[in-house]
Every structure is written in C-alpha cells, then in structure tokens.
Figure 1 (spheres, chains in turn yellow, blue):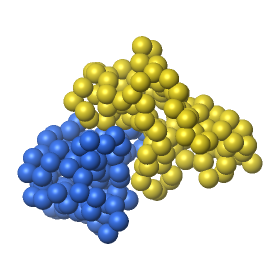
Figure 2 (figure 1 turned 135 degrees about the vertical axis):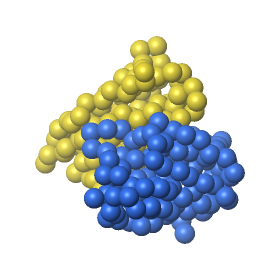
Figure 3 (figure 1 turned 90 degrees about the vertical axis):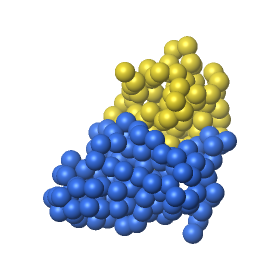
Figure 4 (figure 1 turned 60 degrees about the vertical axis):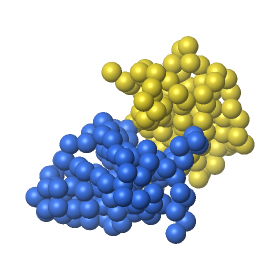
Length: 109
Length: 112
C-alpha cells in the first residue's frame, strides 16, 4: 500500500529552527509537496521537490532524498504565525497526490 | 471571483438527504479535485477531473458523485447522506502543466 509518515505534533520556540520529517512509500514518484494549513483554513502550497537536494525559499527549505524515500521541511527564525499544520504529499505514478496526516507545529514564545 | 470558491461554508444535514457541494474556480485550470479531511487522517481524494467532460474516482468515491460540464464548476453530490460523511470537504484545482494544487476554503458538513 501507499504510506506517508510524519510526526503528529512538534513544539518549538519562537526564533528557533525546526525540522519536520516525512517518509514515504508510494507506487511511483512524481514529486513531493509541502503545504501549510492553519486551523480552520485551507492548505496553501509551500514547496515542491522532484530532484534530490535542497530547495530554499526564504525562511523555509525543503530537502528530498528519493533513494531513502525521505524529505524534510526546515523552518528558520520561527514566528508565532508559523503555528500551523504542515502536510507532506507525494504525487504517485497516476499523478494523484497521496497525503500524510500532517504535523501540528506549536510555537512557544 | 479570485481563485476557488466553495458553497456552502457549513451545513448540517439529516441522514438520507441529498446534498450538493458547489465549487467554482476562475483560474481556467484544467484539473479539479474533491478531498475530504478527517481528524488524524490525511486528505483523501474522493473524485477528480483532469479536464472538462471527464471525471475519475479517487481513494474514497463511494456515496459521492461529480460532474464537470465546464472548466469552472465541479459540484460534488451526496445522493443519500450518512453520518460517516461528516467531514470537511475541500475542492482544489491545478493547471495540468503546473505543479501545485490550489484549494478552496472548504465546506464543513455534519450529517446527523
């Protein structure tokens, strides 16, 4: 079967750095996405990786290792507004997104 | 309209009733999707449409139907609602040549 694993919840301190991991087992691979979802709102796109390596976008970076079935999202200089759920999703061989259950990130002052 | 809209925002429905959730996008995206989101689970694909006039079944299609008569609209119908269909429903779209999906604000549905 297809499976996306990510931690259920993480806590970090304002101004610090946090890494959210995602491991996947899917039928085929056509890219990995990270989305942010604030409570009661829709998911919004953060990053996309299709080749191995690091993609940096401001305070957020995403890393992919296809051979290990592994990705992480790195958030730097954490702000209170970064408190949200972070969703990992893999596009499979049918070009459909398979979603993880999300990681709830709690930022403490 | 800017992006994707969904209606209604929320709804309480008696079991056995028929309900249509509406979704409209103005980005001229070819592909559209319906997901449900339940606590502790990832988004699950119900139905999708790669282009107007075509639809396909996702991971959890039973009890739901869709149509795609034109590019902009992608309604989701529950023919006879059951309590297990209580969920938050998100509509999304993407251009077939682009990478990310854009999501509507969601419909919170409660079936009693």
